[in-house]
Image (cartoon, rainbow, N blue to C red; front, side):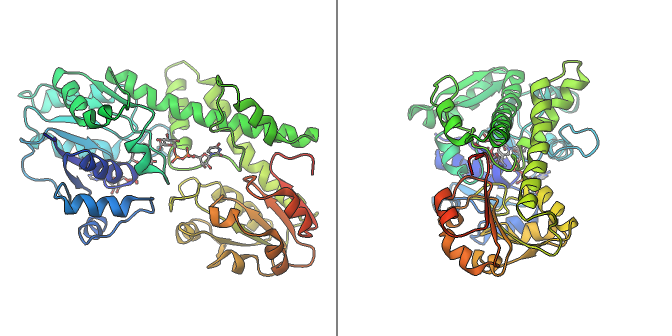
Length: 440
Ligand code: NAD
Ligand code: UGA
């Protein structure tokens, strides 16, 4: 028998988790305070650009296992689990996780909880949060037994549904036997398919999430340093990193150099881990270096593109293909373009961007950025074309066709190493920059 669940927050994590938990056979109510988002979901729409999600929402609604709500019911007494998936953004001053939304959601839940309801935190939260919520519960509801649990989520945007249903592992942290039982039942269908469900205590589960994101961010920052080194030594970082990744102790993933990591999680979670390290007197040297390296990587590639255009970018037109922080998503939170494009605009360039999903969002975030409906429109008469996000449609564009639409002395910059170097050179660009390739 499936569990009865309320998922709080209908964002990338809350909505995807809710729909996937319904797919596992549980009865799931997704709740969000954003009434427009809930109205859209109730009307059969999907507010996120995420592969497979619209189909999954429709399938699970039709099966009667998934519903959407803009408020909580008076009582959650018969509910097995409440899964918190609200945002925990970076606090603008302290750099730590801002728990305003999480605490507000928990405050609303408290009077409604039943004796067997487990409050599971899926949002990324500081170590000790499950303990803190249990202590809060003990004060506000001494009749309850403090069933709080941690279940960090490791899905990536763009592949969120597949990542949720076929993860490398599920991590759960429980404080009580009931919490452990609910976590086990929640993921039993996945465990039956061979997924490892790793249960531990709540602090270890919470720490595993920050440590994983920080490690992946550091791996990318390392690859970006190797790319910069390769450029200055006249080597190509691509095959070097590929050779490195063949060592099974290192592995090939997250070694692709680029214009710096972005997104709603790596920047904020590395900042939070570094801040907690500072506060607790246990400086996180690697994480701090990754953060610094990431800023430098963005600054460096912005400069490399400007250098391609000659002594001055003033009056030049730069076409930017891809604005989302990665392909497959409409999310632009901390996308590299948000720090890179303003540098060119401030130096007097006209910057025209395009993106299949994130164009309007980025247009609101970068004053002075022009938006073109397609890549062809963006490059029309441009002096430079920059591949910022490797959307498959942009990676497939023929350099010669791009070149034909551009200004006489046009240059090309491939910040994702997704285009073929020889085709770029053969297309007749005056100068070509392929990130990490010092052999050009
Ligand atoms: P999001 O901004 O997409 O969604 C958060 C949602 O919570 C919003 O729709 C908001 O309206 C809603 N909300 C806020 N307060 C609420 C309340 N009191 N009651 C009900 N709903 C409320 O955020 P996200 O990207 O899904 O991230 C959520 C959490 O999951 C964060 O802690 C994040 O670090 C973590 N996480 C995110 C990802 C990802 O890929 N985005 C992956 C793993 C973990
Ligand atoms: C990341 C993690 O991969 C997820 O496991 C985690 O759950 C999530 O953060 C989170 O906590 O929110 P996500 O941010 O969706 O997922 O996307 P990633 O695929 O990790 O990419 C993050 C950034 O790193 C992107 O800007 C991407 O372009 C960049 N990246 C990634 C590289 O520059 N090189 C790589 O090799 C990989």
